[in-house]
Every structure is written in structure tokens, then in C-alpha cells.
Length: 178
Image 1: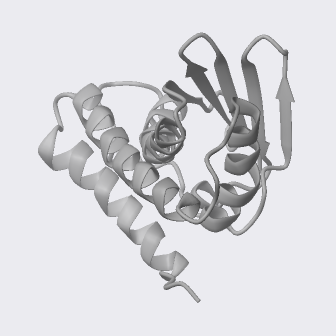
Image 2: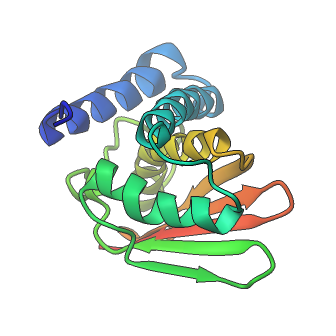
């Protein structure tokens, strides 16, 4: 039996990490804060992927790795599988999670604002900062599985969230809806 960490501890850690990078370390440059948060997530995802696959045979193709991410890896992190996986068979994947746990308890925090924007825009920007960490986790996990990629998130319709994965010649998208 593996060691587990309380979900409330992870929520608090994510909240404090985002607040520290956005309000203290890089308060004037949100792009740098986002990059640092994503880089931390990348390291976490890379190491978790290594841990979860060490007793498995190496994946022979991208589809096996993607299935692993959607089922096993996601289940380990979020205690559920991805709700939906779509592809256009040309390298674009859309992964949807209808109840993404890490955003379910986060409200739009106006303290993570960077200018004079309307309240909805401030809330969306604050919420988007919390998505860089899971983007990094996904990118790190895929990188460890031999799939270099870029991952981004879109939260145009809060609280729904869509992640876009862009692999070397391919593209992934992950959707979260609540």
C-alpha cells in the first residue's frame, strides 16, 4: 500500500503555491509566475509517471501511453478516470473531466489580479493560474513516457476547463466541466 496525502493538503499547497508566485515572487510578471508553476508541475508529473510505470513494460505506441494517462495516472491523481476521450485521428485529443477536483473548491480570487480588468476577467485570470500546475503535471508525465508536448488550459466557460495538449506533431486537448 502506497503512501497518500490528504486531499485538503494538496488543495492548500496548490493555493499557497499560486498565491506565492503570483503575489510575492512574480507579482509584476504573471507570465513568469505561470512558467514557474508549470515547471513545478512538470517535475511532479515526470516523477509520478516514473513511479507509476516502473513495474510496467514500456509502452509501444502513443495510444497506450494516452490510455495510461486517462485511466491509471488520472485515477491515481484525481481518484477517477477521465470522463471522455476524443480524437480527430490526426494527432488531436480532447480529454474531458466533468468534475475536476482541484478547481471544485477554488473561487475566483481577485487578489491574483494584474491590472484594471472587470471582475469576471480577473476571476478567470486568477483561476487560470491554478491550471498551470496540472498542465505541468500532464506535460511531465507525457514527456517521461516519451511524448514531448506542450499543454495549455482554456477556461472560457467557468467552471468548465479545457486542456490542450500539443505533441511534437500532434495536439491534445483536455476538457474539464463541473
